[in-house]
Length: 180
Image 1 (cartoon, helix red, strand yellow):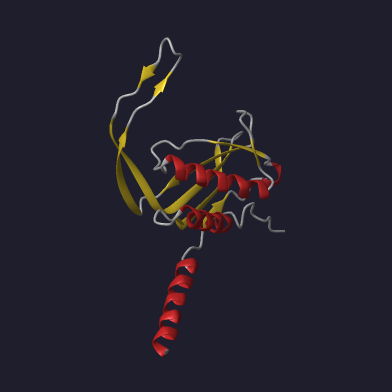
Image 2 (tube, rainbow, N blue to C red):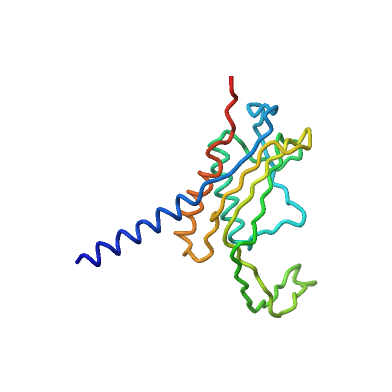
């Protein structure tokens, strides 16, 4: 019985260590007036590492919900207050090979068929870096880094719960408070 209790304590300590290790770092422009920022648009950061399409959609949906709690609204317009982009630091990486069957698209008279073949998808685990730029000044006003933000090994439900907690932690101090 003592073995089981000891094992439970060890497992609990390991779990607490993983959550505690997930503390964000961030920085911001002290001269920026964050109260004026209301709208944003996603931008792609050149040469950044990105996620597979499904995980990227999951991440962006989670970020959008958290940004909405912060008073920001996503807009399709180019006239927005903020540009937001992200990248994933290559920590743990899995390469998945799968067979691509191609696709047919177009009208019935002129359908085009994609070619079949093997494709490779990279699944990233690890560090998420979020950048927020003032669109009028083309200047970075906030950045945040969170280790262990993406858990590629989790099932979809656990992955979402992990992401929810991670994004909440990442944006905990956004917008930064002005010091009197």
